Length: 195
Image (tube, rainbow, N blue to C red; front, top):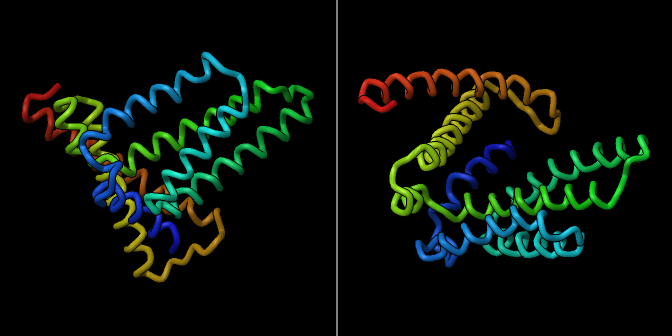
């Protein structure tokens, strides 16, 4: 299944050695994300957002995150087409709508760069152990859980192929398992005196 390869990419990329996974680059990535997020306050020029997206794509392709790029691009284009169609039919399509859509993808790809190039121990060293670092660490745990679900369904002969509706079953199992795991984690943390 192609989704297994995407999840494996999400699990493996933060621990590969390249210039972006060095501890010193964490500060630059954080500043870059903040700049991308607040860029919307200062500019409504679509070309700036397109340049940001192109820059992000170059970095993602340089670290060889091909599947992640394709998945986010597919999701973004699908959402984009629905939003543009609704705005066009309603007669509310303006440059601001286009800028908002481009800004959303620039922000998504910036966070993707951060996640795919930052091991959780780097954030823990920088920020200590807090809710943000704990949540970031849980992403990896949930991705491992998703991989286990995909493997178990695959071993039972469950094939998804390109039928998007068959993902409903996987998502249901995934959400149920995440809820169970989060409850167990919550009890374990309360038992240790963490509120």
